[in-house]
Every structure is written in structure tokens, then in C-alpha cells.
Amino acid sequence: MSAFVRKDGVLFVDGVSLERIAAEFGTPCYVYSRASIESAYRDFDEGLAGLDHLVCYAVKANSNLAVLDTLQRMGAGFDIVSGGELARVIAAGGRADRVIFSGVGKSEAEMRAALAAGIRCFNVESEPELDRLDAIAASMGKRAPVSLRINPDVDARTHPYISTGLAGNKFGIPHARALEAYRRAASLGHLDVIGVGCHIGSQILESAPLDEALERILDLAAGLQARGIALHHLDLGGGFGIRYRDETPIDVRGYCARLAKRLSGCGMQVMLEPGRAIVGPAGALLMRVEYLKLDKAKRFAVVDASMSELIRPALYEAYHEIAPVRLRGEAAIALDVVGPVCESADVLGTDRALALREGDLLAALSTGAYGMVMASNYNSRPRPPEVLVDSGRALLVRERESAASLFAGERRLGEASAK
Image (cartoon, rainbow, N blue to C red):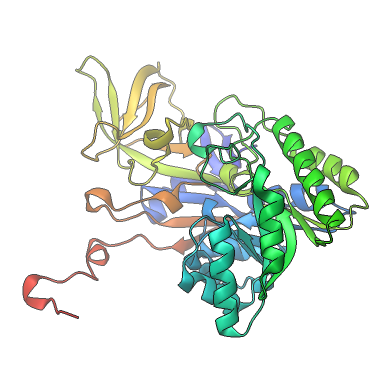
């Protein structure tokens, strides 16, 4: 459920109007609800009550320090995919021993930083990665805790760009090679094999693929235990979908309660890695109409946000509801909502029925996940500020970039130096 509600025709979030936020912080601007983030996290955590578990928030969905701080205060673990994300978690007060490190291309520097920090586990995605991690751990006089991410070859029934569990995807170790890979891991002298995991994709809207993957991973875990490879945790990944248009998401709390019942007595800690489901509905991109172009074959509302701030529609043909911040008692017309970036792909929404005037405010909803984290400076556009609404207070948690900050690390020819 979206955190954004309408009162007397105006959109509010946690008691604060979006008109007030636009007046104070300008547009475009990302806005998040702390209450919504906390409520979504509790659905996972409380749904798994009675089962030894750790909910590891997927940092890639939204890595703002205030968001991470909100979650670490609730006891969350963190799923990271880069050294930069590890640094963010630590800066936000998160505990390294509650961090799991996923991703197919971990560098030597990233492995060293994670080992030095004392993370909970590496989710290893290939046999060459095992060899590299073992050598680095040996050079540091440490042992690296590892779990192998097994690709169960299960169709998540989602967009092909965000499907990760099929044999043709780049992620994970093929299910057919799992036993051999575990034998290899167990034979290396500076690795501790502690878990098994999978992650089949993102924006999953039905539980059947998750159930199928679970059974394949449980069969594998039983086979490993029978071969003397003791496992301490079972990582079932994330990928829980949200409502963008008319989707019916999985009942997270109910799913987790069923999962807790199914895995009761399994002897392993159970981990989940939700990201989008925790922060997606909590966010909106606030923008203002610059121009109405009504004299072409199509009619356009040109806004001050763009694919630089929200790339999902251009990248995935993703749909986000675009809502007027203040309703007008006028007839709506069909408009494409487009940005100022010099690309025909810079379209945030097509054929939207809207009653607008120049200067009106709009909000692209369900943009708390994969919004700001995927923003760019294309066309030398400064990235927008981020505002977290907490108990009626609108808090600036990231300042708007300045034009000068975009080239602060660059040098003119006469200023450049050779290394």
C-alpha cells in the first residue's frame, strides 16, 4: 500500500503535504516515508517470528544513509553487491557481522575490505570466485565464511532483465554443478562453508516460483548434509513484487508465516533479501510541469524530472502511476509525461489522463526502489535531493547536487597532471 494519501484533493505523506515539500526543497525531489519503510520491514520480521531468521535488506534498492539507518535501528541485516554499499552500511551504523556480500564480479579490493570488516558471509557465485577468495583470505591470515548461490533454474515469471534464476542468466552456480562446487569449497583451506542460497529474480508476484526454488534448495541442503557438509543458514533471496499499476503483490506477512511453519526445525537460520518490497511503495518522485505542448499529433506535459532521475520507464518500459499533487476540477486529457533530456526515450508515462496547467506538481509513485540509486548526471543534470518524512517532519537526507559538483573532479588541459 502506498504511503501517499489524498486529503482535500492534495497528496500527503505521513501528515506532510507534497506541496509543502516542493516549496521547501524544490523539484525534482525524491520523498520517502519512514513509517512505510518500518511497516514493510515488520511484515517480514514479524512474519518469520518463531524461526531463527535474519532479514537482510537489499541495499541496491535504495542506499540512502537515512534509509539504511532506519533499518539497522530495527535490527536488519544487509545484502550488498559492492564495496561501496559495504561502506554505506558501515557509515549508516550497520553491523558488518550482519552483512552478506552477493554479486557475480567481486574484485580483490572488495573482498579484502569485506574480510577486514568481518562480514557475516560471502554469497559466492562461481568456482573461480572460490579460488580467488581462498587466496585472499590466506594472504590476510583469515578464513572467509561462504555460502554458494545456486541457480535453481526456476522461472520467476517476471521481466527478462530482472530474472536471475534461469540457466541462461549470469547469476549463481548451475544446480547441476552444485555438489561439485561445494566439494571444491570444502577442500579449500581458508574457506568456511556455512550456507546455501538462491535468488530467482525481482518483482515476483506469485509464490509458486519461490516455493519451487525452496524445495530444490532444501533437497540440495539435505544432500550436502548427508555428505558431511554442515550448513548453518539457508538464504532464500528476495524479489518480492509491489503494486505499480494493478498488480496484486504477495501477502508478505502471510508468506513468511507459511515459510516459518515449513522450515520449523530445519536446524538452519533462514535469511531473506527483500529490497523493493520494503522501500518501493515508500517513495515518490516529485516534479513540476514546465510546459504543455498541445499542438502536435500527441500531447505532452514536459516536466522538470527525466530519465536521468527515473530511468526505469526507459530501461524496462516500467509503469509508474503519475498523480497530480492537487486535483483540478477540470476535464482530463491524454498526455505523455516527458522530461527535458535530449532523448526520445525520455518518457516517464504515456497516454495518462490528466487535468494540468503549467506549474502544476506531479508525483511519480512507487519510486522508493531503483529510483535515486539508478539516477545519472546525463545532460549534466544535478541529481535531486532526497527527503525523508518522519512523524510529520520533512528531513533533508541528501542535498541537491550543484552544477559545479558535477565536474569538481575534472581538470582542464592546462591543469591536468600525468601519473
